[in-house]
Amino acid sequence: MGDVAIKDLRICVVEPSRTQAKIIESVLKDLNVSNITTFNGGIEAIDNLESCYPDLVISSMYLPDMTGTDIILSMRDTESLEAVPFMLISSETSFAMLEPIRQAGVIAILPKPFKSQDLKKALYSTVDFISPDLSDLADIDMDELEVLVVDDSNLARKHIIRVLKNVGVEHIHQAKNGKDAVNQINNQFFDLVVTDYNMPEMDGEMLTRYIREESSQSSIPIIMVTSEGDKQRLAAVQQAGISGICDKPFETANVKILIRNVLASS
Image (cartoon, rainbow, N blue to C red; front, side):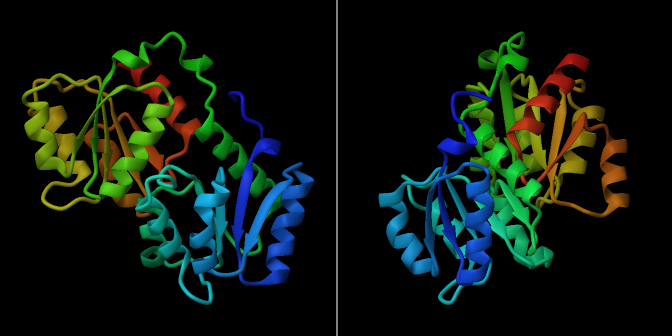
């Protein structure tokens, strides 16, 4: 890790249940987190987040006045809060309900009830996002890499780019789908492609097959970022020639490992 420790984190908890809020606060205090502010509603939280300026927001999905999705979208639409990590603790399992939060860039999604070790892991992910230890990437010229990020979600692209910048990548290009990516790949050299799977017009699998079979840069390392759970579809993507898969949430620690692995083998 870098210079930030778990005990240094400023955390805002948004939870309407006082019992559940106390459980979260208790686990955080056991992990030596002392700077905790709790809100029981979304409007109250949104009205106060900028003055609190937390390092992490932990929210329930269902609040009296809005949802956790509304909170993270409001944060991503506010310049001063745009990059603040967000964690969801919820019993919600619906893909349709959780996907917008994944797309907006979430540190972790924990179930209710959650395990203290899972919250601890998520806090380490938060610390790694805020102040990553880059010693294991010291032999890679991260600031010289040309990276193409492909995702039809503007929010998802922004989150991926934030994580990549945090690990030292400076030259980042964007494409909103596979067709847009193909146009850029045909006109510029890239060291790495980071792409979503599910996209309109040309998805991640089709883009991967194009790169491997038709482009002049057939050996570009490709990292697929996806919340896709269908094993057959993921197997097809692997057969298409991706270099590595990264689940959403797009975690800094996993990104560092993937970058090291795919660049070392390219």
